[in-house]
Amino acid sequence: MPDLSELLAAEARRQEPTSQPPFEDLIRARRRRDRRGRIAAGSLLVAVVAGVALVPTFVAAQRRPITSVVGPGSAATVTGVLRSSGGPVGTGQFELRGEIVFKSATGQTTTTKTGSDGMFTIAVKPGTYTVTGSSPQYSDGQGACQTDDPVTVSSAGLTGVTVTCPMRTPASGVTTPSARSLRAVLTLPTTTIRTGESVAAQITVTNNTGEDIHLVGCGPIYTVLLIGGPHQESPFWAACAQNITIPKGDTTYPVTVAATYSECSPRGDQGMAKCLPKEGSMPGLPRGRYTATTWGVTDQVPVPAPITVTVKP
Image 1: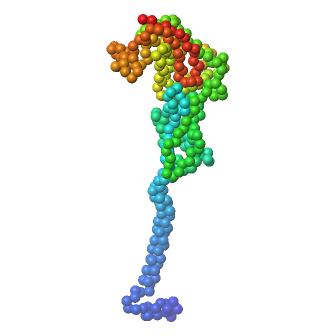
Image 2: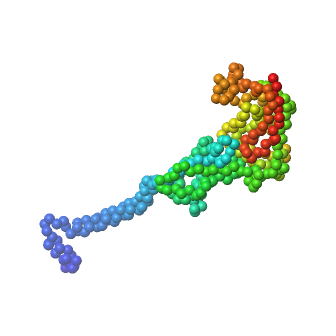
Image 3: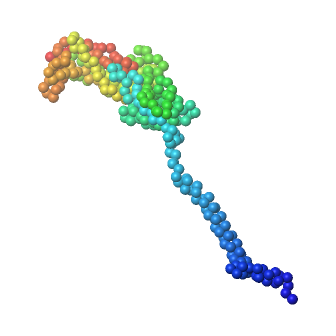
């Protein structure tokens, strides 16, 4: 006698539509679909896990690298110049080669270099900055240079920022030394010079301040000219910056005293003497009595007393 399971299976087969696959085939097909589903689900899980690893890598590759604390799009351009205030007599301000530092209110600093013409360009975030500078041409790079006031930079940038290096007065900028502590003496080998000729002389500077004196100028520290009657001239210095140190004690500086004009013109016009035909050399001074007068490259160096000189034919 058939058991109950066999009777139920037979009844199910009897009620199946003619186009329906046999019951056992349906069971086997269901099991196959279940297995494929598990495999597909496992593959999807792997794809998802792989996606987690791959997607951030792709996104990171698209990011713009940050190369500055300013950040892309937030930097403002600032231009300016580093220059001295003061300088050789009659030359005014002159540009300096060096370094510029912008310091924000939070203490962050941004640094740039100037060109040989003292000009600089820097990119900083908009805000207010303390701007300082230094130059090897100014007090051996130890002098403090800065703007008159803090600088405010807008998102549109800023131009015309001037960082100045003020001239230091002797004796570390405290006071000008007295004539007793800093003096100069001109020594001539003779007080009679033939017209058109020159003599080698010297100026001895005595620095009794107790320390070296640091200045900024250009060219020789001293120039001596013969002045007298209608012949009134003054020296010329180039507009550049060089460190000048007057050491402690006695220092001797060589100078030349010439019985010639210091300037001339080809035709003798413009209030100047006519140049000599030989390579445009300077003509000699007329005979007479002159004063050997000394100029310093800055008004902070001592100058010696003048000496009377006679020019003869």
